[in-house]
Amino acid sequence: MSATAKKRAPMPDDIRAAKGGTPLVSLTAYTTPMAQMMDAHCDIVLVGDSVGMVLHGLPSTLGVTMEMMIMHGRAVSRGLEKAMMVIDMPFGSYEESPQQAFRNAARLMAETGAGAVKLEGGVAMAETIAFLIRRGVPVMAHIGLTPQSINTLGGYKVQGRGAARAALIADAKAVADAGAFAVVLEKVPASLADEITSAVPIPTIGIGASAGCDGQVLVLDDMLGLFTAFKAKFVKRFAELGNEAEAAIAAYAAEVRARSFPAAEHVFGDEVKT
Image (cartoon, rainbow, N blue to C red):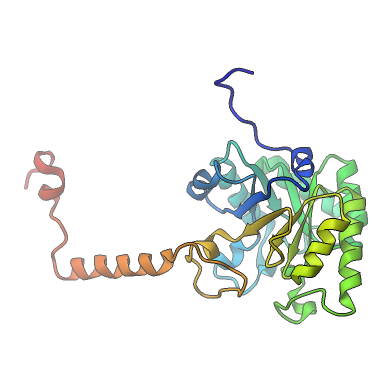
């Protein structure tokens, strides 16, 4: 291989082959600049439907539309060369039937260049996952806390405790058997996440699960401290950029009101004549 050859983005089979190896790194992205920043560091960049809450001020992910996902997917794809882009299927775009799911998944991939789609659900969605994969649509599954089902789950609660433990293991096995190349485990007890990781042949991607998962994903704005309206207990913030940005905005406003903002001739020198 030429020393100058560009590293290609991982394919679903590459992600699947990472099972049990070096942990997979994943973050969400919604814009081109953020995608460019994480491209060299992430194996997977997820265009998450969390965009509805993080950027659009929605109370949940339920109001996110196909058009919103396509717009943000296109933006993220412009910033990626090395990382695999996976895009969320929004609420209502795949639950009705496998045929509905294929139409919308095909549109998402064709119009954004995504390498795969992600959808929520375990046993109930196994038939749909298999249907998509047989038709050329790679699928990342998502079980445990599934935000699109928040109204039936009764809130953002830990999943898989007590009698629900066996059901969540069954969900993981069902999506793996259906052909998903990876599965996100959200907000499940660490011991259960470890058991599922050992029980399925595909990588598990944890979010509020266990360090023993085959990889981790976080919402970028949570990780950077940009999204301050809500902070999940499991989120580790690696920065507090929201506070810094607010302080910078306040400082700017103060300078403008005090008329101490630099005049044009001080900024551009001879380029501006006053």
